[in-house]
Image (cartoon, rainbow, N blue to C red; front, side, top):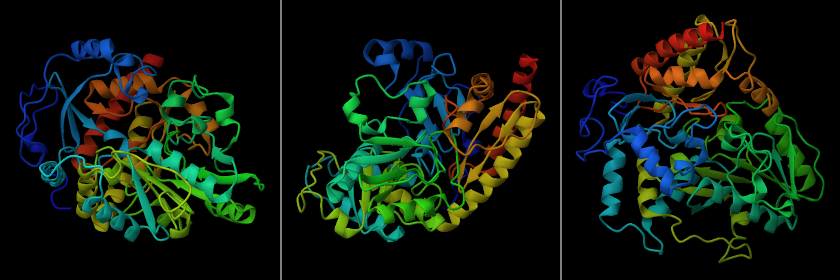
Length: 462
């Protein structure tokens, strides 16, 4: 991707006010919102529950008040007061090229000029489906929806419809969206807020959901319709699959006549040029996609072998529908991203992330905190614990991730980073997302800030 990490000299210094988008490599000429973070948040709480439209955006687990983003450019976001932050969240992985990348902006504007929604087939959804299937061996058809939650929910309905079975096996700490049957044992925001699942979910909704430990192959019987798993767990911080785990799941599903579902909403076209299934060599029966395939716009998709997908209405008995499914703006953005990011770009990003992870862990430990920064492709975890500054053992399951988070070091470390202009997720169960706009110079900013933040927290802990 040409000049993916260029353009940082166009941006104002950290903390400087910015009245309008700076233009240049990223951004347009529209004037971003202004005001104060406190005023916008107070205003939001009057009409939006908790002031946020997703609990993971709240600062409840780290304390304080979330800032309000005015605009983003490349690897940076700016709040409404004009402060600049190096963004290592990137819309929780949905943004790959960087904020307001010109290729994506142009694609969305061009699509919008033709109409934003039709409720009828469009060329864009066909082209994006072809692009996904061409990159993912074994995925012969996909159906688009509007979110990762819808993708997982629909994939499970399809698995139950095809097998005629009811039971679903999921793994503790893996998050597959907020549908009733999948909230049990969820990671991400469910874990961050300390929720066992959710109020309002009746016992019957999870009666056929079996939650088992990650990285352990469960015993399956003839009642199991499917096993759904994040092939690289990225909702309990980063937990990589043990050697043989995914292969064992494939064998267990085959033996029991169950389907294997890979939730690649995060990993798909983010962990590498294709999917975790390609990197690991383990092919599931069904996939769930989202985030990157929408180029930062709302999208989800689920797909698999042709004979399985044929069970969907209108050709089969499994019903699924959506007014905005295959939205032309989202498919245009997704096609732009998949067309812009080359395999060489992913390889270069993986190399940068590997260097960054080692340096980041070293900086945090040198600052006096214990740390682990595991890597899977272009994804990195971030585990921090109390002094002394030693290497933590990366956890193998949700219990291990939860034990590190329970030390309580992440919240002060998060705020110490934020004061230095580096934005990570406001919760200890999310991963670090570096994108193609993050060059070595930007990542070095994060490494230096992390060392200083660790030292500040270590001193406070005594």
